[in-house]
Image 1 (cartoon, helix red, strand yellow):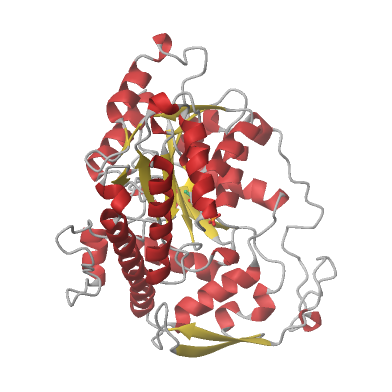
Image 2 (tube, rainbow, N blue to C red):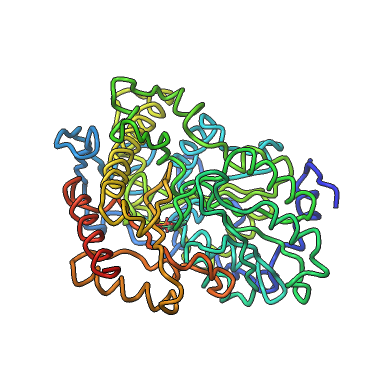
Length: 495
Ligand SMILES: Cc1ncc(COP(=O)(O)O)c(C=O)c1O
């Protein structure tokens, strides 16, 4: 397979037709309303619509919504903003409370396009051949992509430890999952390239020779869930080359990409360049802090990028977007039309109006800048929490006597600690469960790492970790107290 830059929609169709599921091919949308423009033309009188099954807007119980928008996270300062049935004109409540386009409201999509263009999270092929669609959270986006693309004949590569709901999404379509080895260290973070390359180069003689060659790689490249690791740019380029050589599509799930921090400084644990008077400008953040995305390397249309408002706005919005080539887009849209119909209008309204109220300016440049400032303030808070948790872990007695090791994240919400069990004392999972119970008795909960393994036998050397989340605790003191309790539990276990 030689990689090909698509020039037309027909090129996309020819290249990616074989990446579509059997179910999608049978999927039809029966339309019962008239889609041709009316021929009615009678001076000032317009056509009276009795066709759509939409309620009249005066029947909606909400007249207006007052939004009080925080100027920064963890503060009480707010900017007031009001949304009414008429305002903002471009996206008023009468539109967002009504049935609407399945792809999402154009004003929000246009803002997202300007934003991702500023961040360079856009493909390299013709601008007319890719699009953005909104959906109900990345879980929804991913579910829809697997429904569209995979079936009993598909094989999907995933990181051996991963975001578990996606595993269910894949398996439920009948597709097979192949785990990829991960390097759980801070030297060569994430997917083990040698393993991946050798697997693909020797497929016909390898452990999965009975399966079709993989058509998809699902990866969480930055602040990976659960490991917290981030793939280097060099690794991303090599994986993209492998995708071209072995003809697979990369599903880039990037909910944590914006929550990117500098490396932990052991000499100065609480160093936080976002706020230490070294405050990072938005240009520096884009150029030097954010990681280069797979989609920004994509010449072929083989990357589908998933972003969500869950971690930078609020998960209850259930709002996400997907960037992909027009062929995949059309398939996704068709499935959205016959399943959830459209992402929540009110969520789109609140996200759009909040972002546009963060500055009094109407200039796109200023709106993008103020949204970036918000995101950087979040990253600042996350950096602080990451630092506080790492410092507490390094200072714990249990760490000092080598009962566990730490993998340091430079993005996202998670730290993993690997427990140094004595394997002669029994099965690792049983030992993990015992520590979990002790932790529970001491009042702290973490995720049992083995539950995030795609295949426990494959990952038998990586079952001994806990995933700790630093984003949810009330404050820094609660993070320190949680680590105290973990320390106590491990000392009790190993005594
Ligand atoms: C890797 C990954 N993808 C997707 C999601 C879910 O995102 P959303 O809330 O947009 O459905 C999460 C949330 O934890 C995640 O860790």
